[in-house]
Length: 206
Image (tube, rainbow, N blue to C red; front, top):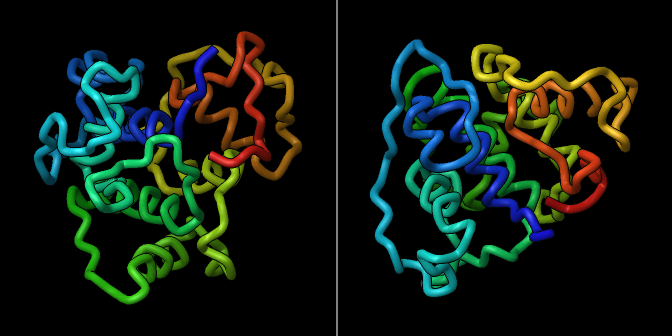
């Protein structure tokens, strides 16, 4: 069983929210997509631009999707660091860009110091966060990321495509604070679980 990297989940969310179904099916797992307008990628990806991502890697297309929509930039020095752990700040960027793109068709965030401030501010203003995180550099948990994405996306991006009964996810209850978000994302086909039993592992880092 391979490790599902953070970039895989980012790409799956992007496919569900931004990419028309025909293209999404070719790039990552098939998910629903909004029909109000087609959102095009904001920058081009060149195969080989990251020295630690080969075109033969199973996650290579996920890296391309995440980069094309400016959701992830890599770690500098020509490295993407696909095995790296995603921070709260990086997750806030993903959620904020997705929220803005799916609602306005664009994502204009200014450069700032620290770099993540515009994304944190947007996340607070739009209800993705109830308050600004005190330690944005910490690793984001899978549960926290699920909640952020659930709050970021409009309902049209989370139309159910899978039948997932209440209580079907072994380690997530609907009574958990993050339960409704996780179940909605499973039903939308964005998350599928870490093993054959569908476990989510909510407290693990993304």
